[in-house]
Amino acid sequence: MDLQAMADFLRTRREALQPEDVGLSRGPRRRANGLRREELAELSGMSADYYARLERNGGPQPSEQMVAAISRGLRLSLAERDHLFQLAGHSSPKSIQRSDHINAGLMRVLDRLTDTPAQIMNNLGETLTQTRLAIALLGDQTRYEGPRRANIYRWFTEPESRSIYAEADHEHLGRVFVAQHRYVVTKYGPESRAGSITGLLLDESSEFANLWADHEIGLVHSEEKHLVHAEVGDMYLHCQTLLDPEQEQSLLVFTATPGSASAERLQLLAVIGSQRLTGALG
Image (cartoon, rainbow, N blue to C red; front, top):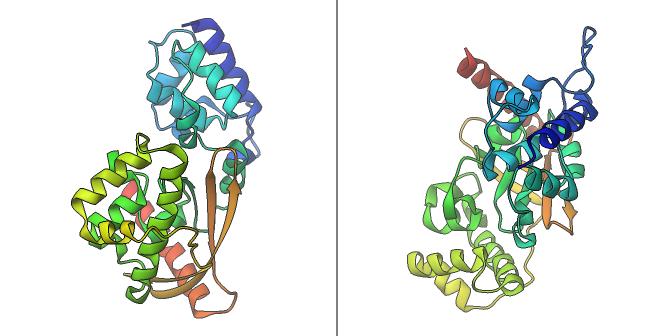
């Protein structure tokens, strides 16, 4: 571990990151170069004091989980992330695990979608980050741990996870999830994380086992989503996808046709979501 080099690297990367890069307002009184320490700490999900000690060469060795969180907060590229891991005294994550590190370009796009439901997912169907409106629309999908992080696992083991989708679409969605999961398992092998999830689902879900036995491949999701929200009702939204082939990540952006009932309900959801957030913080 090289404490001084790590502290210098963190400081220079933080100062190079501008408020606009992460969806923050610069404000007329800002004097700091780049982000403030407390802003970066919040983006990384840690205390400002802990992060400040790392920059001042006075903190303990951060865990791999902490380094990964800081890398996401700083919007580091893969090369920069690997460098930070090495400075912190850890081996660089294996390439097969790189789908957990969010592409810096996708993060910059997501940071600008403050009034739009959007989220970034990896090739296992794990949600890595969401905008506030995406959480209001789909629920917080980043809170899960273990196999529950994968959307396909929750789909076949937790029936309530399907409630946001119209019931008429459940059968088709299940087939698409399985077909896309098969592609990932074939690519990375039965010993991969995807293969492990397959084994769990074969034991726990007869529905999944039956679909898996069909060996379907190449099925895709429809761009139009019929969502059923518990508070604002039915919405027909378009889901546009921006792909990062290298890291196999997808940025999903949900929009409604202007002037439609779905657009009005999405605007209402934005208000409801903001009120919830304000209440929770109060």
